[in-house]
Length: 100
Image (spheres, one colour):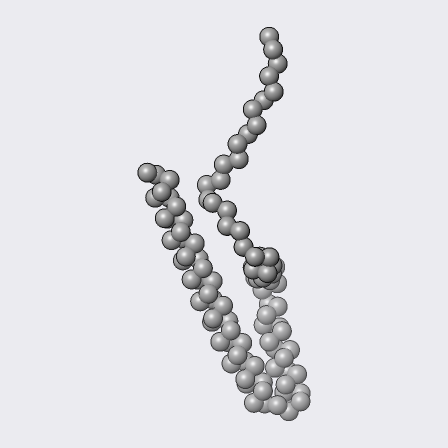
């Protein structure tokens, strides 16, 4: 009886890996950590900027900060929804090629 080394396990992924730039990775990771562990942080930052502007007597600046924050939040949500939609569409496309 000869002892044979076990065959190496072949790592199989269901989804192909997507390599992204480091800046995108860090930005995405920061967004996820903030969203999951510190959900109030963006609002606190916005509120601090508004209070600072009001403290300087810059009411128009405070209003501009609030409007810009709302626009940014809406744009960010739209971007994330589009990314999720693209990922879902690419997953569907990959599934079709694997079935054939």
